[in-house]
Image 1: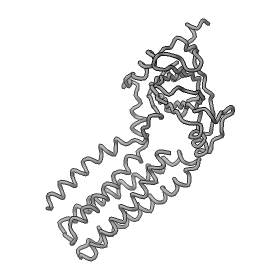
Image 2: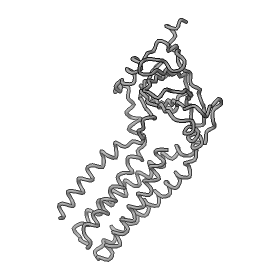
Image 3: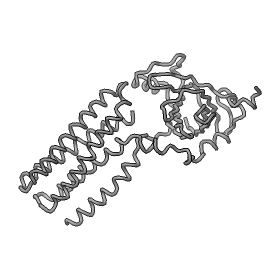
Length: 152
Length: 167
């Protein structure tokens, strides 16, 4: 009995470091996408206007000028080693067949500054099928691009 | 500048290029290992005291009489639990800034003070257990009840922490 308890305890404890170290913090969900480009973590989030307003209220942030509460929101956050990046950003959205959504030359999102940095948002009525979103930004090593596959 | 030369004119970007970007493997040479290694240590360390207390509480149910053979094991687990709990408190203090502003500030304070209370209670319990080893069955049963109380308290703190980390 004593040996069994010791062995099972040691087994439980041996699982702990792996399980604990694997858990860094970010929750995974299909509308909250991340990509690491060089030193910058690019986060793309697609959410309804209602959810976005709830998020702003939770973080005590102001509703940006020109916000339309009927259209869903596409948010981009760029985080480098020094915090959130304040830089030029452009988006290109296409469907799986290559048909462009929005401006063919790219969409310039609205840059929103707040106490903790800057994020970028745009409002587009997106079709319900699979979409491809490219985020182009000015990173530490010049112009950099991140690509995401998104199902609204 | 012609559209072809303007890197900010994305009219030439097609679905295939974006698909390639979305499927691009991680560039390990530029991956910021130090940043990812050093970030969010509280979220990692906090699992150790939770599991150690659960293991001790589960062990305490395996036998319902004080048995001196288990005592060194208990002291080892309890010591490791206290050590990792204080490390979790220290690293948690360093992560509090992220919640200094916003609606989760009060929530973060409950988590902070609850964590402190758990750490102090378990440390006092450990010091007491080291100073006065428990041999009587009655005292041992009190210890078991306290351990299960600690499991519930740490689970409550873990719930608050889970809400904070996903906010």
